[in-house]
Image (cartoon, rainbow, N blue to C red):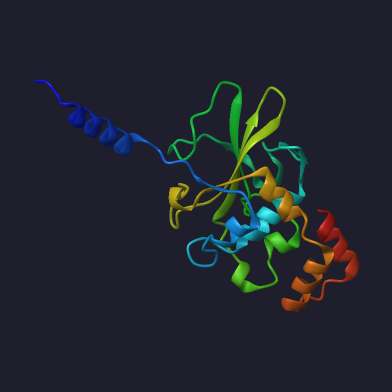
Length: 199
């Protein structure tokens, strides 16, 4: 039996749709970040975790390096991508998941115990990084969350975070953080605020 060109194209498209993975949406700016449905489909706590992460990495041009050990620090560990959430890894690359609040007390208080209940996240949100084991550089950063009631990550709420967005997040001024302190009626003092800003 001979397939027509249209039939062949339809078979190829069906195969791609049934077996293909869609890449996580890329967030390149604060504007893109504001379009995410935080508080409904994505825990607002993700914003705190993302701010903490952006403040604890080194970015030189678009090269990202961690300032901590992704195999043990901050509740992090190797992520094997069994469910195929992200691209398959090339040889010499590893995924690590960061942010399990139950495994570690190293996170600052604003991440572990947000001052405002609306920022509590039920420990669902995670950051996943793709690290090149040859030079320890990070060439992929993803914000994701567990599907409620499951150990798997939610492909519909997984986002790739660009170095540009990470730099923008780091630029929040102490004044912005001070206004957040007042908004949340936190009794944090200026020394603690500066420590928060430098972490």
